[in-house]
Amino acid sequence: MLEDRATAVSSPTRWPAAYPQGYAVVDVETTGLARDDRIISAAVYRLDARGEVEDHWYTLVNPERDPGPVWIHGLTSDVLEGAPLFTDVAEEFAARLNGRVLVAHNAVFDWQMIAREYARARREAPVRQRLCTIALSKELGLPLPNFKLESLAAHFGVVQQRAHHALDDARVLAEAFRPSLLAAAAGDVRLPLLECRPLTEWSDRPVPRQASGGYGGHRAGGWRPSRKRPACPYPNPGRYEDGKRLRQGMRVAFSGDTSTERELLEDRATECGLHVASSISRLTSLLVTNDPDSGTSKTVKARQFGTPIVDEAAFGQLLRDVEPADG
Image (cartoon, rainbow, N blue to C red):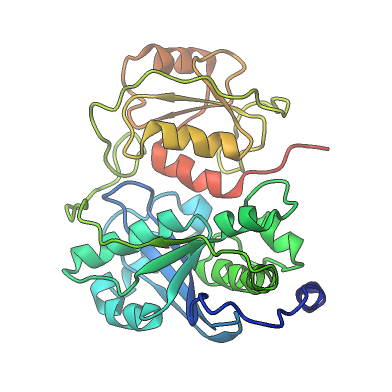
């Protein structure tokens, strides 16, 4: 099916000279979203200038800490215990990235996680540019219901076998990127390339799992006034259930400090089809907080109403696989 969709894209008679000479399609699974979080698995598909697969590589990584939301990525402490440290795979990883444009779905996240791991290892990732397939999909005007990886894959007829497994996610993205690249070349579309700069804001302190069930630290002083957002187009399907996926239309509220900018978290939630609420009520589907034992009005009301609570890292993982609304 993929070949049918790919060949349906007219092959460009002249390949744009400004296009890169090679790509590294990357996916990483992590313990969370904060600066203290770590990579627990990584995969790279190397592609040539026209998007053809050259080879692929995959590794587990021992994060030397709690693995985070195991129910999302499936990698337990026992599984990761015998895995190599990032410093052990840094050279091979770098060889896969060297001289290529890093391609990822929501590329800023993958790049930041990779860059911080190299900073901890006192090295620098050999990446100078990145390309986000979400941005490319927008440049191409693809008729997607949303910008999730599964929607991009479905558009090009790519079948996903193991969601949230780095190797399969990278394969799916590589197969969806090739027809996207061909379409861009045929239409002489400018690729949305961004510069990759080394990051220094990282921490190598161990972060154990907190008694409250949280993963990773949080930043103080992050309060800001909320801003008006467009109304959510989907009906509220009810409360979030532990171990299941979020569904479009769910009402999500936030409380307390977050390591990721609150506005960014809210924007991502809105883009995924969730309703960002400024207060807690009996209709609230989920409260996101790094300190569920605090006495804020939102956490108190959440406990009174029995509203489910997750921390920032778990929420970030859940955002990667939001279930579409019914009908």
